[in-house]
Image (cartoon, rainbow, N blue to C red; front, side, top):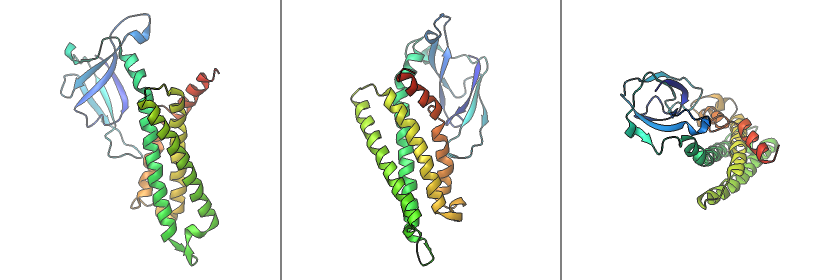
Length: 231
């Protein structure tokens, strides 16, 4: 096997990598892909670089390189030539998990903003008493509740075996963008302290930014939805 892949979450710390690679020469490209498990220490499997990121520092995101990497046939995961189908089968689950992660982050950031707004005082009163701040908190609470209802419905439908590709694409982009709005507004409520990394909201703000990028960008999600609308 030869090739390389960048932006691999936990790639720097992994004991094995699950790699999609070309194993055939069919004119139908999606029939050529298989999934191979490659263990750390396999000759030719190189962890080339640990990437420096703006957030999610606990995840060892890395670049993986394969140079004449010989892997035994027993390391084939599933059937040969079925890699594309396996990936497509699990995409809606991946995006549902991403939406759940964004929702959880939004809930946490809102809780921190609300608590700070109740305890931080300015001009003789908690900053949450100022109308602008109270409206921002009301907006955040509303959007989070809408997201929670939608995502919980999708979890139930997914468990029931329903096709939720279109709706989960909606959830993935909307909830991740909503979480970023909550991050912005909650940090703003903290004022200068929000910019200090000793406050959790600063780290949350950095971490949640990638939610609109991984597992399919916002733009890709909208493209899927548009296609399903017949556009």
